[in-house]
Image (cartoon, rainbow, N blue to C red; front, side):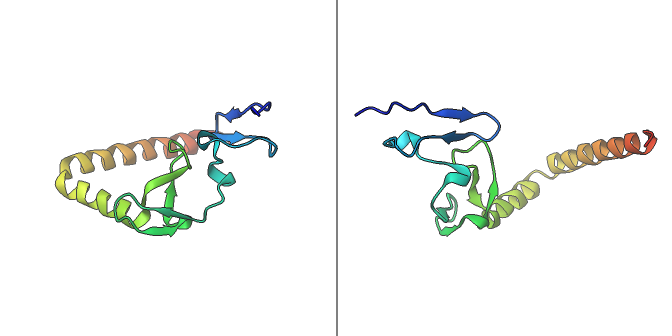
Length: 110
Protein backbone atom coordinates (compact mmCIF):
# COMPACT_ATOMS: atom_id res chain seq x y z
CA UNK A 1 0.00 0.00 0.00
CA UNK A 2 1.53 3.36 -0.99
CA UNK A 3 2.10 6.02 1.61
CA UNK A 4 -0.63 8.67 1.74
CA UNK A 5 1.38 11.05 3.92
CA UNK A 6 3.63 13.74 2.51
CA UNK A 7 7.29 14.24 3.31
CA UNK A 8 8.08 17.84 4.21
CA UNK A 9 11.62 19.16 3.72
CA UNK A 10 12.78 21.61 6.38
CA UNK A 11 15.06 24.01 4.55
CA UNK A 12 16.98 25.34 7.54
CA UNK A 13 17.98 21.93 8.93
CA UNK A 14 17.73 19.57 5.97
CA UNK A 15 15.55 17.19 7.98
CA UNK A 16 12.43 15.33 6.97
CA UNK A 17 9.24 14.92 8.96
CA UNK A 18 7.16 11.86 8.30
CA UNK A 19 4.23 9.98 9.75
CA UNK A 20 4.90 6.84 11.81
CA UNK A 21 2.16 5.17 9.80
CA UNK A 22 4.21 5.45 6.63
CA UNK A 23 6.42 2.66 5.42
CA UNK A 24 9.89 4.11 5.10
CA UNK A 25 11.81 3.66 1.90
CA UNK A 26 15.64 3.91 2.03
CA UNK A 27 15.54 7.50 0.72
CA UNK A 28 13.14 8.48 3.52
CA UNK A 29 15.30 7.40 6.44
CA UNK A 30 15.39 9.90 9.29
CA UNK A 31 18.41 12.19 9.49
CA UNK A 32 19.93 14.65 11.93
CA UNK A 33 18.31 14.61 15.40
CA UNK A 34 15.90 11.91 14.19
CA UNK A 35 18.80 9.49 13.67
CA UNK A 36 18.60 6.37 15.78
CA UNK A 37 22.25 5.32 15.42
CA UNK A 38 24.73 6.50 18.01
CA UNK A 39 27.82 5.72 15.93
CA UNK A 40 29.23 6.64 12.55
CA UNK A 41 32.10 5.40 10.41
CA UNK A 42 34.89 7.88 9.58
CA UNK A 43 35.66 8.02 5.86
CA UNK A 44 39.37 8.62 6.54
CA UNK A 45 40.43 6.24 9.32
CA UNK A 46 37.44 3.93 8.74
CA UNK A 47 36.82 3.49 12.47
CA UNK A 48 33.31 3.34 13.88
CA UNK A 49 33.10 6.12 16.45
CA UNK A 50 30.39 7.79 18.57
CA UNK A 51 28.64 10.63 16.75
CA UNK A 52 30.06 13.05 19.34
CA UNK A 53 33.45 12.54 17.63
CA UNK A 54 32.18 14.19 14.41
CA UNK A 55 31.74 17.88 13.71
CA UNK A 56 28.57 19.44 12.33
CA UNK A 57 28.07 19.84 8.59
CA UNK A 58 24.51 20.61 7.52
CA UNK A 59 25.39 19.99 3.86
CA UNK A 60 25.65 16.24 4.50
CA UNK A 61 22.59 13.99 4.72
CA UNK A 62 23.05 13.18 8.41
CA UNK A 63 24.19 16.67 9.46
CA UNK A 64 27.64 15.44 10.53
CA UNK A 65 31.07 15.72 8.94
CA UNK A 66 32.39 12.80 6.88
CA UNK A 67 35.62 12.77 8.91
CA UNK A 68 36.04 12.43 12.67
CA UNK A 69 37.47 15.46 14.48
CA UNK A 70 40.92 13.87 14.78
CA UNK A 71 41.17 13.13 11.03
CA UNK A 72 39.73 16.54 10.10
CA UNK A 73 42.36 18.22 12.29
CA UNK A 74 45.12 16.14 10.69
CA UNK A 75 43.94 17.02 7.18
CA UNK A 76 43.76 20.69 8.12
CA UNK A 77 47.30 20.64 9.53
CA UNK A 78 48.62 18.87 6.43
CA UNK A 79 47.02 21.47 4.16
CA UNK A 80 48.47 24.33 6.20
CA UNK A 81 51.92 22.76 6.07
CA UNK A 82 51.70 22.15 2.29
CA UNK A 83 50.23 25.62 1.53
CA UNK A 84 51.66 28.08 4.07
CA UNK A 85 50.99 31.17 1.93
CA UNK A 86 47.33 30.30 1.42
CA UNK A 87 46.88 29.49 5.10
CA UNK A 88 48.57 32.75 6.11
CA UNK A 89 46.38 34.73 3.68
CA UNK A 90 43.21 33.06 4.99
CA UNK A 91 44.22 33.85 8.57
CA UNK A 92 44.96 37.47 7.63
CA UNK A 93 41.53 37.81 5.95
CA UNK A 94 39.86 36.38 9.05
CA UNK A 95 41.70 38.71 11.43
CA UNK A 96 40.95 41.76 9.25
CA UNK A 97 37.27 40.84 9.18
CA UNK A 98 37.29 40.34 12.96
CA UNK A 99 38.97 43.72 13.55
CA UNK A 100 36.42 45.46 11.33
CA UNK A 101 33.50 43.79 13.13
CA UNK A 102 34.91 44.72 16.56
CA UNK A 103 35.53 48.29 15.39
CA UNK A 104 31.93 48.56 14.19
CA UNK A 105 30.65 47.21 17.51
CA UNK A 106 32.75 49.70 19.48
CA UNK A 107 31.50 52.63 17.39
CA UNK A 108 27.82 51.69 17.49
CA UNK A 109 25.72 53.30 20.22
CA UNK A 110 24.37 50.98 22.87
